[in-house]
Image (cartoon, rainbow, N blue to C red; front, side, top):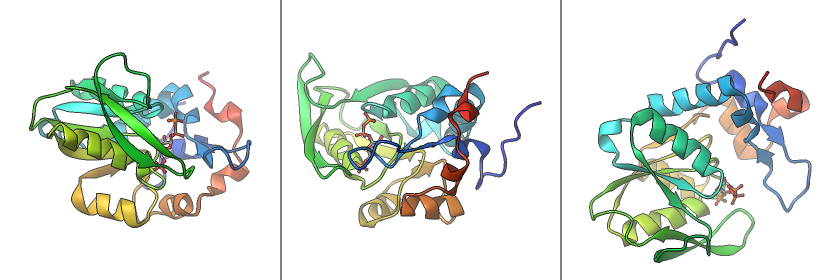
Length: 206
Ligand SMILES: O=P(O)(O)OC[C@H]1O[C@H](OP(=O)(O)OP(=O)(O)O)[C@H](O)[C@@H]1O
């Protein structure tokens, strides 16, 4: 029997996200379990693509590493190209660099090929998850350094804080978990009630 998606504010695939079992050095959850299951991954892409206007986007930038998975999926769905924004030292071509501090508290750089696009190009930024917003800040800098325009931001969720509030005010932000919902509240608290019943088998592909 086909899995019912559930309402937009309470999609079934949200509860496939896995809790951290490795402690403080790691992110508090792992959304990649969604990607294992074809129905879940495509229901997620359906939700993200539904709120995008392809006519307002020239290229989809994915943030290293797991942002690549969603960015490439969205690019394929809406017929756009894919631009990787990478962690440092990965690209073997000329690069621009931007500094950012993420949830771990460490300041790192991010890199994008130079040049990547013509001035005025509209770039959609896609990441898996936005916690502090630091990684997105690095990506915004890279786009603006090459005189591109940020066409919007996409993630499974954007936790709510001062950084991300400014993103919602300034850009079109599309998230699977939407503001004002119980799932958003739990994401802000960095604990999902679904962790209590989560089992890896729930995401198995068959
Ligand atoms: O909003 P922030 O505090 O910057 O955190 C969000 C970033 O952290 C996670 O990636 P991570 O750097 O752990 O790398 P990964 O994609 O390789 O798992 C996530 O996918 C974002 O890229």
